[in-house]
Amino acid sequence: MVAAAALAYFMNRYGIAFDRGMLGNVLETDAAEVGELLSPGLLVWVLGLGVLPAVVLSRMPLTPRGLLGALVDKAATLTALLGVSALLLTGFFASYASLFRNHRDLRSQLVPINLLAAAHGYARARINAPREFVLAAADAARLSGVEQAGRPLVLVLVVGETTRAASLSLNGYGRPTTPMLAARPDLINFGTAEACGTATATSLPCMFMDVGRAAYADGLAYRRESLLDALQRAGLDVWWIDNNSGCKGVCDRVQVVDAASLASDAGCGVEGCFDEVLLDRLDQRLAAVERDTVIVLHMKGQHGPAYYRRYPPTFERFAPVCSTNALDRCDPASVVNAYDNALVYTDHVLDWAITSLSANSNRADTALMFVSDHGESLGESGIFLHGMPYDFAPPYQKEVPFMAWLPEATLGRLGLDRGCLMQRTASLSHDNLYHSVLGISGVRATVYRAQADVFAACRVATQPATSVDSRKEKT
Image (cartoon, rainbow, N blue to C red; front, side):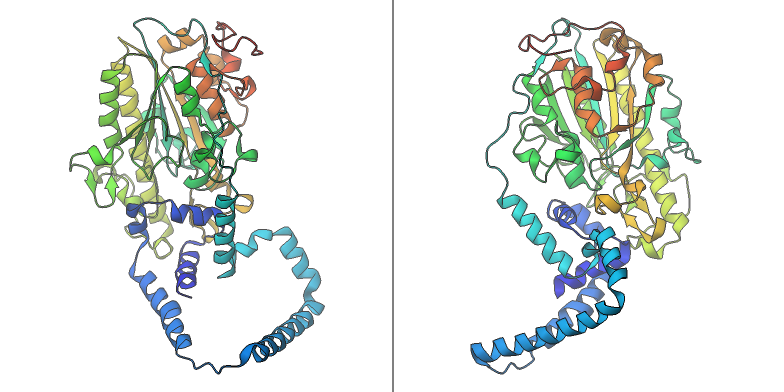
């Protein structure tokens, strides 16, 4: 009853649904994110609708009935309930049958059945998960001629957090939320991409897997190689720099830096650090680069509900802002203002990262890609945050930005045509990320699919088609 009361509070406040995926988010979050969700209102709900009824129930006297008596009582109660249900269904069966057949995810709205079902599903997925570790790209290797002595190739892959495509001015949004990126002529905006999931616990590991959204299963990154493993096996130096709640298994076998733990007090507090902390670690890595390298920056981004904590005060361009986690009690415009301010700050961080890469152009060929893990609801139709079951989640939670920055030197080295890339209009998804990063890094393996590589169709100077260790690969 106590757990159900807490769950009902969050469902009522943010308009969320609760299923196995949402339970995974709860179990895989960190203390900072949990702290932002606590409030006096939660305490009132838990005490009033959970603890108090539980205390009353626990003090109700129970008369021993014996096994036979208990079975008789429960059988009678069940028979009566079934009889009432049958009478109700007699008059409304057609309506209810159609409703639950077409909207099966409504069961994720029923407390506490949804909590029990989520716990059962989550435990079953963990217990039945295969124990063997799968080498998805055992034959990963570099294309011959990709590596150039004395001039490393450096790709920075920035993983956004809760960045929805619809709120970027680059994508036609009415507010200037991405002015710095929009001023860069060498930025290639692929527009909107479909995310693997609506929450980090699913979408983050899924986007780094070769199997795609259709074949992804919870926990797969803990028992199957990720994109980062393939890159490392092919000989690249691979780093994961984190300012979020971890990588959900995809970076377990590469070099990891917890940016917040190494940061100074500036820009950091009990709720975490601003994303500029990633740039300090990036500069350190760039100064030490000696060979071809892939660096992943995992942002805090626009993680809610405390959007107002995601950016320094100097980036508050839109006001007033919602400065509480009780989003449903704020003016809708103030929620959007806080979120958009956080986007302006993300624009600044990405522009700064590009500037750092440009500063190293005398000694390396550099590139940057940006894609978010999932989107966000800002009160549309009474729904806030993210994590809705995928089949009926709104587009705001599933549509994310996908872009790349490629200077001329890097385009020339990779044999890519900028005009072709700028005109690319095919729809994208997280399924494209794995193959696109392999493609731009000059790595090939049996699992690589050229049709999913966003850069493949725009190569004007084709690199050698076979890798050192994979002579049988079709091109």
